[in-house]
Length: 207
Image (tube, rainbow, N blue to C red; front, side, top):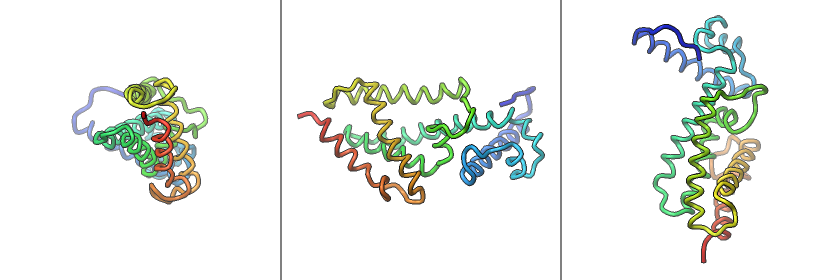
């Protein structure tokens, strides 16, 4: 994202508002037309601007994707932290984690696809954006290490974290691919979270 000379507080607020509007409009286009369908020309038309005006705020389309990548992981981390904080058992923690992942995807499908899939050819997140996602990954490893102490498994803590990510991503991706209009708890795959957790509970509970 471009930066320039120091500006007044009022101008900074106006700039921030414009950036927020640009990103919200970009998300709307991505939801309607597909994550990879974003273009500077189409975005400018939707905003009723000339395309060159967008370059005062972003260096190009990939810069907008990068800002949305950071936004997606930030929102997901906030939602996950809020959702799991009340869990009292490892089973409840996992159940809430799976539900939070699918809920985020249903509420923010364009951010979910951008962050957790590879829908945009040529898009490579910046180092700063990758740090945001890496922080979330590292936190999942810490949580897995705690879980590893209270369950029965031959997986290492890192393998345990990756296994759980693969499970909840698989259920969520299949739900969105087949029945994205259905809410959490419905549909062929949206209804399977309790069944998946029941299998894990049986396999991992200590005698």
